[in-house]
Image (cartoon, rainbow, N blue to C red):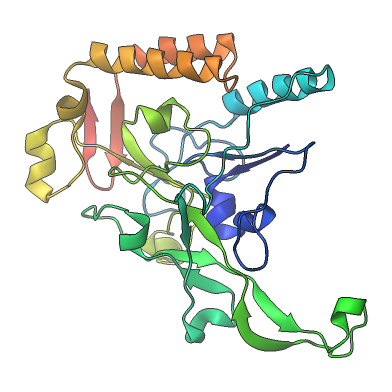
Length: 288
């Protein structure tokens, strides 16, 4: 099993693990699976309401509940029970959004993903530049396919390998991959990319950090700044309805073998707690 965060797709061109040099989907081998943990950052989750050196909150979506379940699935695979199918963006299901390359940035391995093609909303106070890592196709000499390198250092060919990320929904949350409750029953927009704050070298990328941009608590607050994303009250009505939706989503993930019972219960328990935002760059501080 190969398990990746959204950050791996944006910063490390992970789509190349399950597509060929032309960007075509590759089928799984019989003994392999590949998974995207939707909307998550590299490594562990950030603490709630944490900026660090980033311009937006770092992403607090925890990948480990899904990883724990996949370890169980892997163990059961040894006993003859196949795991769930791979969950990744693909060309076939129209969830793959390809990067394009500007010749001015091609040499340093930087492409961009169109905001329109991705479907990412325009959120006041959030800079979307779509920058994404791409890998150059290098010329190593005419016999490279036979394992003979004759051009050292290699020279650029003017081409890059196709790289894609997951399409997003109206909230900016990824539609492909394993959508844990923070993505499927969201209280914020999550992503695998972020930018550095101006004081820390911004607007350069915040590299391994993802972002989390909370929804407004109510319609009046969001319309004041022109945020197109529905507020918490508009989408859930009450906190109890939100908690019920989290419970249903977590239970469904367990049925699909992407969550263990103990983690389902943790999501249900945590959903009962107030949603508290503190010191957000866009919405400041509130409790819902």
